[in-house]
Amino acid sequence: MRPSRPALAGSIALLALMSALGSCSSASSSLGLADVATVPKTSAPSLPAVEVVSTASVIVLTLDHATVEGGTAQDPLDYRATAVDDWRSALGGDPTTSNVLAPTGWDTGVVAHEWPGLRFLTPPDGPGWLSVTAAEVNGHPVRTAQGIGVGSTRAEALAAGAVAGYGDELRLDVREVPGTSSLQESGRVGKEFISLEMSGDTVASVHVPANDFSDL
View 1: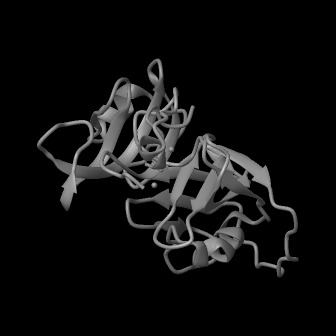
View 2: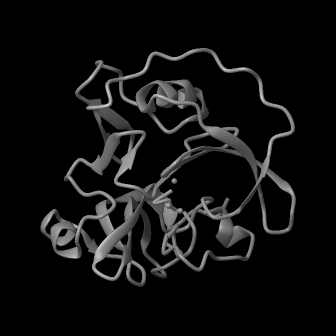
């Protein structure tokens, strides 16, 4: 923690694997995979051509998926490996890909797909994580449903409903996840959320989905 990238490292993480590996990201307040090492894949299959969405379109992030506003209408973009081609189409370009390594050097099976300003991590099974470090990616503004993105102010985030998280982190759309236990609040049910990493009074990165309970 599904991401500066999260202080506990999560994919928001946002957002995560770092807790189980006994290591924390110094820049993240949520648990996740976004800050573990990556190495180039030894071979990459040729990718099919994609239909580019209008550069006027906005990528809107929610906990469960992202949507495209403006440009070509598309189905929601989820955070699974099967959606990589949909993200290529929405962002209008091919990402660089790399294998994600644990601090001990073994391959986690997670693949990082990176565009300038956006990192999409996909595990072999289950949902992945997004880390956004730019206000726009390939000309597409990227923001939450509340209108918060990289460059937004602390005051704007708080006015949009953000609450305090771990350290200097702010959190949007916080919800409990039954059957989990928080690693940050002993005895409490775990939560997932959109994590806003702050640099002073400015949003420096957005991680989604992030959580405080993952022990992958």
